[in-house]
Length: 262
Image 1 (spheres, one colour):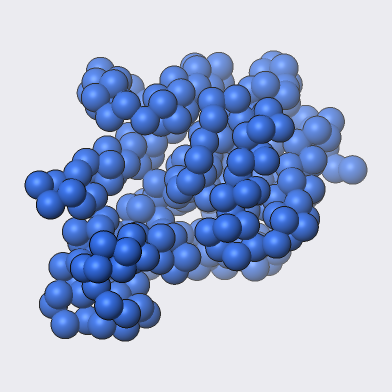
Image 2 (image 1 turned 45 degrees about the vertical axis):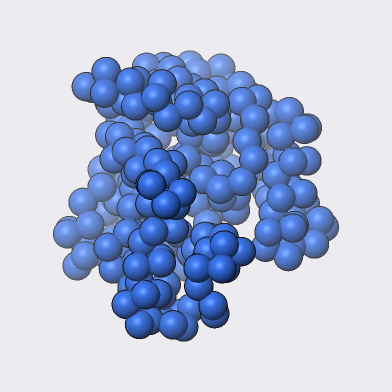
């Protein structure tokens, strides 16, 4: 076993990472904690059982598939590593997953060892407006790696506070905490991601969330196919980091409300 572990948020980053000459074992984080049920104690069996059930039902995944793709990968966190590198993008999907990873690491490791670094595509302009790590090549991965930032106890405490507020789901408390924090240390992209989440959980006079209203507006503009709706949504809403399957959750809600017919 290597003394270095790289944690990638999703399989899309694997191709680019595999083009690098970076040493270390690789763990792929394949969860989508920005959707579905959460509990504060991410290390509990009930947390992962609830996630497995929801993922299986929502995305038509067989339980054995979840075990193989998610749970078995999580076992790598039990390894005796001297260094852990976290590769996570700027959007809400990635940043909530990052909060989950940091919670697990905080519970499993002595923070004096291993050294934990965050690598994030903070400035998309430097790589021809790439939307995320999945669009980068090996050289660009290595360039990002050279600019990585070590996380310390302060960032872990901030992440714990954010995780607790996110899981509790009280928008007023989260907004208050968000406003009171003026310094975000090595996790500055958490701030805009949580702002997007706050916007997402607000409900308008018609009883629709921001995302539902956005998708309905796109549909009512004359765009009637799912793939065209996805593309139009992503033009302006990349901060949410949603893939087809996640957008479908909201489209299906609109279908249930009989507001769209696809």
